[in-house]
Image 1 (cartoon, protein in one colour):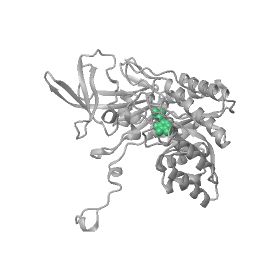
Image 2: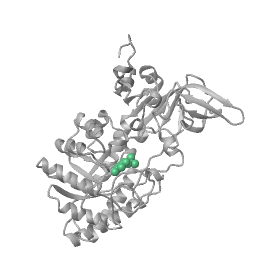
Image 3: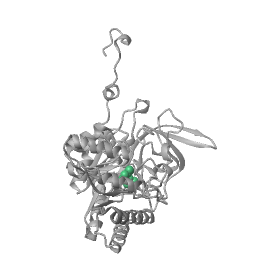
Image 4: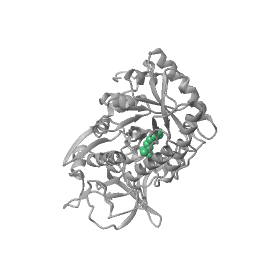
Length: 443
Ligand SMILES: *Cc1c(COP(=O)(O)O)cnc(C)c1O
């Protein structure tokens, strides 16, 4: 059994995270429950910052908040000295409500609406990562209306395909994101941006994919971006003070996943930047990275209560839990794999192979296939590891299931950071037109 961060098995044979016995957490907060190991989140952030500090370069580590965006997480990100990426008005609102410093917020996305741009301009965020020509003109026009000049990066696709799942690979030419370097579009975008008076071009941004286990893709991206920067300097006499290499650093979900230490990714990127830019006598840019998954992924655990089971002799045994694709859509979306333990009987030896099903009306609602567990009983607690990234963030109300609570645990203390949704939350936005109202029923 592989335990992340502060997780351990206590004397009672129960899983403990952040000094909290998860069977107690289940009693106090109910299940399903997302549990976040605060110390591990902080440790991951500190690993990035420390690796950059060692280089002596100027840098920003921007937490890609889409991985897990709630106000308490924005507080942690600020406390750990990170900047913050947002990709929508909702994420921006969350960050601002949490008091996150606007000048350290970067706004991403391939279709920012005029309203979103206005909102971000009014908040005086630090940087827009501009994705396409329509946005360049739109941002310039709206900034002019507000009499402001705004910092921008241009998102480019360097033509690098990281070895990862198709849906989470973005650095190749055929992508909905960014300006392509290879076909000259990125160069045109720089020319356009330099001609727009309200935009201050800081540099370029590249994000090549997600859950990447090697440094070669990042090195190649740096080469492409450096060559591009050098071309821009030669032809347009503009130098970039900032280069952003995105996120995508991999984590260990299951045995066989071999992520590199976070510092190794940073070193590969900074070494490549120093090498390429120094060789061209180009002033060393400030380096930005945008880790999401690798900040919060392995710090998250989802706790479920086991309910029913169905044994099909000679085929398989299904064991159903009180959540599923509503709190973790990744297995259904990406065939993602997870490890899990019986959290209330974590010292017992495995006796059977079962497959963990969710409770949604969907055959695809499976969380784990073929998991070795002790003989599972109704009422047991199942802890699924590494659910900190893209789980709560992607949760839905399919089947009108209420989204679970989230707790931060640390040093034996558990703090609720998102309450479990109520039935009122479920129907809160519903309206019944007068002609459909039932007499004598309040609505
Ligand atoms: C999703 C995304 C990230 C974060 O990716 P992770 O794999 O979670 O590290 C960073 N930058 C951009 C532009 C993204 O779209």
